[in-house]
Image (cartoon, rainbow, N blue to C red):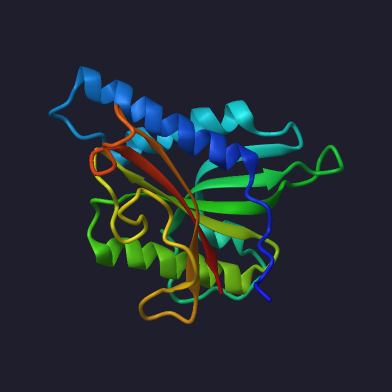
Length: 198
């Protein structure tokens, strides 16, 4: 019997679909200028915020040391290491602190494999130290198919995938895309939702 996976957050799916259309729009204006990772993060913030339930709050660039306060900190999480996006449950009490529920790293698929793997290891380490959170990578590909995560038909590569130099693994939970024709799998805009497990 297969492992029962937790439901994908609807705000994540909607934000990733939205960002693929947004990339297509930006490419119509500035085809020769690839989007910076910071621009992708900023637009994802807008899209998540627009689709987030009122019980949750979104924060950007949060230090991992803050997220793991009072918990053992893996060596991978230095003082300067920051999570790109954190979705937290609002506190019950007026003066309480939000509780982190989702920690997200955003990565361009064109980034070096070593950088992508380093973020995957970091997320696996956080998940191991903080079992109350879910960890995701939003992997964005501009006008190409990210072959490591998406098959020849433009679909998610399913199953467990090991993370190099880590006991953790990831699953490609969903792949969203925007293309100017259904047959243009190779040149579409892609956004993959990777969930990382310890």
